[in-house]
Image (tube, rainbow, N blue to C red):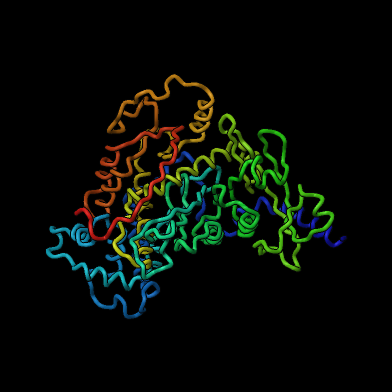
Amino acid sequence: MLNSQNTISNLLTSSENDASDTVFREMTEADQDAFHPVPESASLGITPNLVYQRFEEALDYVCDHIDEYVSSPGIDFSRRSRFDPATLMKFLILMGSGSSICEINKFFPMDQHAVPPYNSTFCEARKKLNPEALYEVFLRFTSSFPELRTFKGYRLIGVDGSAVNIPLNKSEPETLHQNKENHKCFSQCYFNGAYDLLNAIYVDAVISTLQKTDERSALLAMSHRSSIPGNSVFVADRGYGGWKMFAGLDQAGRKFAIREKDKDSQGIFRSLDLSEDEEFDIVRTVILTNKQTKETLSNPRLYRIVMSNQDFPYLDKENHYYALKLRFVRRKVAPGKYICIITNLLDQEKITAEDLQYIYALRWSHEGSYRVYKYTIGVLHFHARHFKKVRQELYAKMAEFNICQLIAGCVPMDDDSGNLRVLTQEEYEETCRQAEEPADHVGADMETTDGPEHTAGKKYRYKPNLSAAITNIKSFLTGHGNSEILILRIKRYLVPIRPGRSFSRNVKRQSATTLLYRAS
């Protein structure tokens, strides 16, 4: 027992000493040199021309190493073609929701090309290209902007998954899904995205078939990737919690803030018997163990038993204890409603309980990003059936999403928020205060606007209408107009940022758009 006690003492001591230096554990020297925290409300100094330049540089890198991303190195793309690697990848990124023939004619306009290439030329070219080529373009482009907004020095990365309906392909059974017996089957894949909540861009993703979907494994996989900045905080919903997740992120040196079930449900907050208070902010060390002794069984506030049939790779026959120092926060968000968060952001002065509540509230912008990604960007309008080509388009549209968001985010909004397109912490806290008080102006009509000259003195801040912005950005990327005209056109169509809006989800089954019938 003496050895066990010494081990436990060492675990408790090490968990306290190592808590403050895990943020940069996975960052390389180059990452640390490039890391300069940008305050939440600061302007980023990004221009459309800079975004286009970084996009071209990412394409050039992949083209220079194209043999790493093709099916037959040394043979594929060795002959001259109008769909060379750069043209093919740019076309996949900027391709719209029309048929392939229509999109080819738009990409090769009459004033520059007398005759466009055949659709079969495009189909043969994309057969040679692996989806990892588009993934590399996306990663290199995104990582070329290290100086983005942070919250008190942290990049806030929301993690969530979403099913994506794809064209039916019975030759790939791993994509098939059937809701009920005797019902028609359909094809789906699963998109696990890591989304920067303050900068409105994706930083990474794991795309898998529906049968192999595991959101927790996807998060743990992304936590070990260099694409996720070292100063990140993973923000996730209740489905991601668990001792294996907390230990895995701790092993990767990552910070996290994950929502958990309230203490009146069967969950961690209830099992640990943290506090009788309605609201609390407690830092506690929990020791996970696979030993069932009098001490571990009699002290459930300190020990959590990991059974032999549970998947927990950090305990074995030689290692019987694993200490986690965590922070447990419970906050009231509405009358009779509370939010519970588990985090390893242990500094209660730097990151307060109010900060954690605001951080989690920002996670809802990730939910909205999927609507933009699927419907505004047009992911659901695929141009192929095979899963390899579907992955091509999913990665390509991630790159397009980030390009459009970065350009739209650099348009000045003439306010003091630094073009921030989510609620500031002050706006969120004011919304929470108003939620508990009757407001006479709720539902009052609001004057519409079509330009920034009307925003001064208005009730809300404004942001670009992304649907209108994307049309102009894609035109700019294909060589039409210049950055000054682009900014003017984006500023022409604005929408207000309305705080405190919540609606019940109206879930409808959405099918992938058929390949046969597309608007021209």
